[in-house]
Image 1 (cartoon, each protein chain N blue to C red):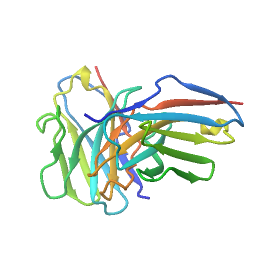
Image 2 (image 1 turned 120 degrees about the horizontal axis):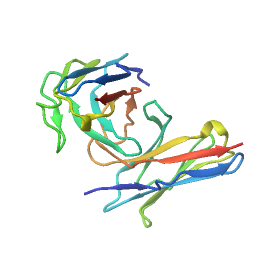
Image 3 (image 1 turned 180 degrees about the vertical axis):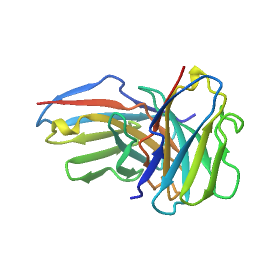
Length: 115
Length: 111
């Protein structure tokens, strides 16, 4: 399965600032996803990163707050903009080949704390 | 809307016994149910996938069942070991690529 590298692994940021999280895959993949996970809660899909076009955002998430780039089939970034303490969470990148019978493979996440 | 429900209480099992975790879904049956393992500070790792018309799937010490009458999947680990201690996540996938996740059940295997 694909190896996913996510950077940074953790960060502590000041409110009002922005942080860009990187996700690098060791092979070309069809689908790349960004999730948020609060402790003890389920994974919530933020958006699907589409190569060469704008990301598809889920309800409750907007491009101005979470801009996403996907310049090629092995790399994506998620920016958390104008951060507030409510943005403190774990952000996870995952990849898949598409299709309901395909698993997703995850990076180890970015643990983000906002002061 | 579709939901996945997993027992939020931690499950404590004695080493060597079989651990059984439950995943319940709402509304119509998903095309697939997927099970993942998540260790602290790590991303989820895919374990098994079972199709709607499959009753059971096995992989080494792992077994997953899919009961459309009960709207439930059971995940079994036989001959459990302390190294099996982790949080186990269930997710449903339907006609597209998106997964809907449960919150996971923490499994603790005591030596």
